[in-house]
Image 1: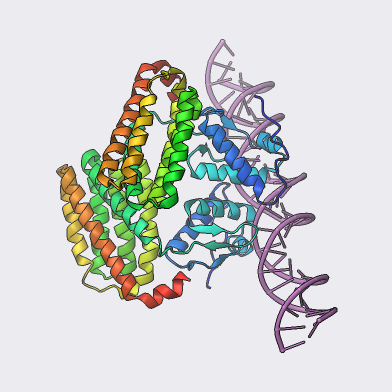
Image 2: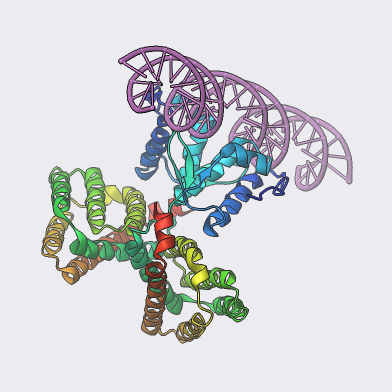
Length: 235
Length: 235
DNA sequence: CGCCGACTGTTTGTCGACAAATAAAATACA
DNA sequence: TGTATTTTATTTGTCGACAAACAGTCGGCG
């Protein structure tokens, strides 16, 4: 458990809370904090050199997002990954893929495409350099950018949450990633960009649906393949 | 400003926060707290006979839900109703109507129908007794029950938020409600229940879509009709 | 007479401490 | 030796108070 040196990151008034919030959020999503592990307020208080009050506020925010679970008067733990509810997750994820890509084709304006293209480049780089973790992160950013081009905050918000939850799940299996397979995603992304540019709404929808199915079935295969891991963490 | 007698509602440890949270949540949704009005922590502290700490926690939760907006180091206010983003809202609302009703037809189990029927009865009663406010609330409960029968927490959560946001909007115009019009909604609800029972997924979808369009266009007509109200609150 | 800066007051963000709730340890008893 | 009960200890939830940030006011100066 190597964690300190986050000390004294900022002294400005409202900044402490968001720093703690974002830091913990990342650590949870990147599985640096494993699901089910307890969160000690005192410990965090020491780590960030802050009183328990701002720590608590950050925790409440994380709880509202479902990233941590608070057992009242008892402990608060990092939320477990719900393997039994995975089909719900996949269903919602697929729908959001489709809807956001659709809307991007319909509503995108000037600067949107450039932003999307940039993130697609980052994704390509991550794939080229076989940076699996970076690949997961940049793929998420790419689709968030598409969602933002779609201009519906409700979808964007839900989609972001789902993608981040997906990052947690993928982290569990990132060791099992083959080095070749992700390459096809680059092409799929390119096709989606083309459909968006030419405002081909139904085409974008179809591509997104296929892309989603691709990813979902891939995750599914990881899970069934690596049942030992799963059993260890379902608990 | 008639508000006290919420005092000493509970002394148990974790209960204070949720009481404050739920109370404020209702008051915001029912427009007892008008959009844009400031929230004074001190005042709430006196009102609920609690320290500012639990009040603050409740406010953070409400902020995470988007019901209040906090201007850092300055005031925190009840979130304004975003009239410019209404089409986003309607789009998401319609999709959730469809998706949840679809899933209800596909996934409902034994007890679900009874729960839905009960809430439909409440809705009928509200309509019969011309209780407009009750009608809005029971309509929301009916659709939440349908969503729960669909068994997808992501949809249910988003849908609930959207329906509650819709309650706020409808409250603005409840005076303009005609006494006859809502009666048709009863029939639409009945049709949806039938489609759900007979597991007619596409039928349920179509009915939900029509129902959503009905409601959306009705709200739209209120807004365009009563532009004075709108202008006053858009700000 | 109008504009700029210091001052005052209020409200938020943070702190350290206390008390309730629960889990773990220790003890008593069968 | 095993189980039930008390005791201890840790951790959460709440409190009152202080300090920073900001808004509005007042007074000085051009």
